[in-house]
Length: 149
Image (tube, rainbow, N blue to C red; front, side, top):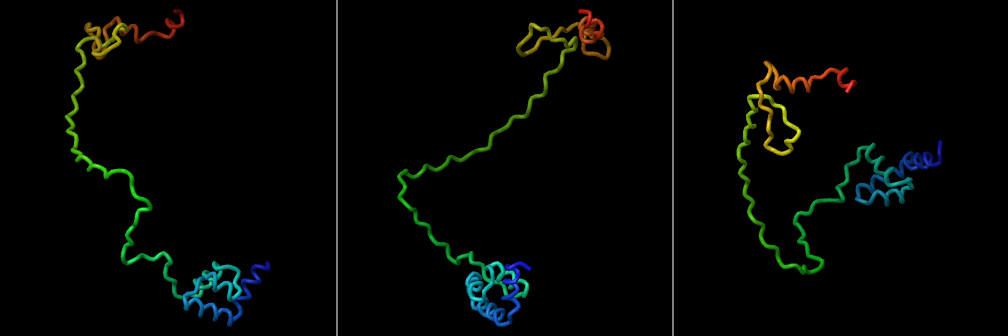
């Protein structure tokens, strides 16, 4: 057994010290003061012992005050009082515009067209696709033709 454990067991095993601790606890002394008087190793040992023995709980040292204490500024403010904030009105959000309709012809965008609105090729498309035969051949090239080029 360590020296700390022997010291802890010594004050709790002695009925006179335990009774003194309970009397001091009921009197409202601080746990640190009780620990010094009964020879406990720490205030946490006293609080733990009280908890295990189901002694009545202590009132919180951080109690709420019944009346709020008015706060006094530490130094006078040098700034003039701020003007009242303007009333914020909700922004009116317009309905989103529907997307522009796609062209009815080929949707190939020429390389020279860098700005908006885009210009499209506009030629007749193949059935089920967005491109004309010329631009479809550019888009769907075989791997062999890319390697040979």
